[in-house]
Length: 185
Image 1: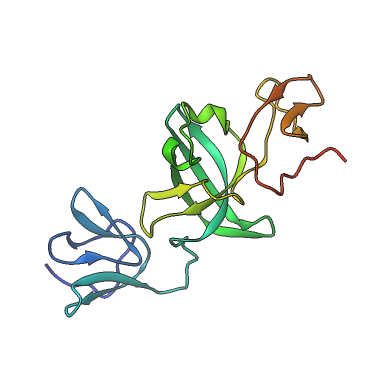
Image 2 (image 1 turned 120 degrees about the vertical axis):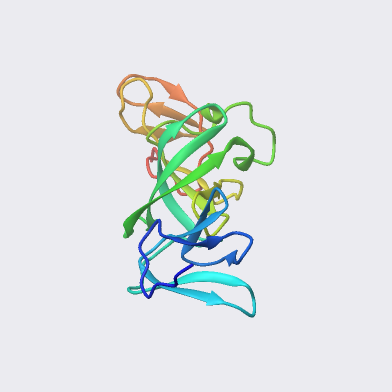
């Protein structure tokens, strides 16, 4: 394989058996590909491959706590678009994560619809360093920070442990973060 000086996202670097994927790469069907624009580095001693970015791109890492919007969901899995590390610090690039029903709570949950809904703004923790990012909501400080009525789309206000729509009177349940935004004072 010819080694290039600069790679772009999706460029093949090697196969998984040759080098262990590290920062700035992802695995697609056994092929290690570049995640970012940069210089590929092949660490012969540790048998790792990574891409050193040309510019410093802010890519979520394992252990990072990020805010995201629930874009798609089914009973067992949801796709979360990361929007930033907090409300005042947005990400410059778009990343998505996968939230599995087993990563929501310590107790068994039948369906994700019991704890989140489409378009909810949630705080999640990233569990890995590669695409697809796997996220969790198991920590007590993680969960929904802004929810909207599934009937009319108005913001849901927290009243004790229940979320209530002030527009249509609908009541809903979510796994709330301690700093839920719409609280009744």
